[in-house]
Length: 343
Image (tube, rainbow, N blue to C red):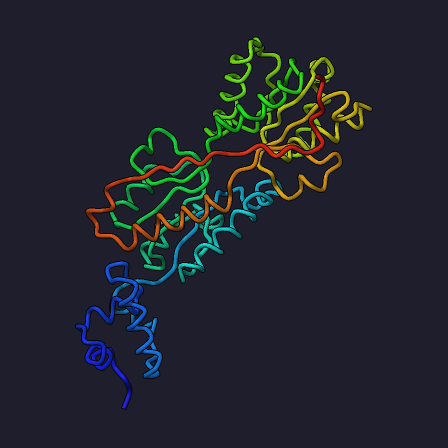
């Protein structure tokens, strides 16, 4: 005769629901009780049917990760692949599967977020993009599907949401402060776009100049996008400004790479003639010559805290979900070879 949950409950001296919750690893049951019940189930050869659990609880055990539409572009993919590795690792520790999706189907233009929810494919969502249209956000809220914004700081219109991200203002400040402390005064800031995270990095750059008695100059801002080739083109286009500078703060590592390669072609040495600091600390930064000094985003911690927060939302009552939580993590400066001292 097959062992049932009721059999385990009788042996353990608990009720049916306690056994069910323990086998579902519910936070509502004390860990020692869960461990004891799981041990009894194992000794009796009880096989927990995950598919049956899904049917009775309407839970899939699967999380949807929504990446931006430009995920496939070389530079974007290079950074997100590292983030994805950390997310997968964190979700697997929680015994959760994942589905990767993008905001829209490129062929049908169908809203993939709505599709995942309507077809009940996911229990929750991790949104790894800086923006989301209000209609989709309202749809998610109406469906009562827990979600957490991941990696990107959220726009002010998304005040009442859960989010985990880096303090990019502090990152821009750290990069610029380091260059100033090395004796550099005429520092170019090459932006990586107009998204909020890059605006914050520029804000940190300006604040560091101000705190150290240096005047902000518009001509030292070079408007760019996070692409290697574009950085090279901008260095050539703005060469008169570049050659008068002491240092360049590039707002991502691909830009920094492009800057270094363009300067080499112009016979300008890094860091002897111009120092360069990047941002993100992608793996590529350690293979470029000279190796790039950069601002490291705490990817492992961001991924872990995002998954933990989503798990909390999945495990809590609906009333508990109303208390939104934003977590801003500090970046760190990684010093390598690309930023020489002038002191």
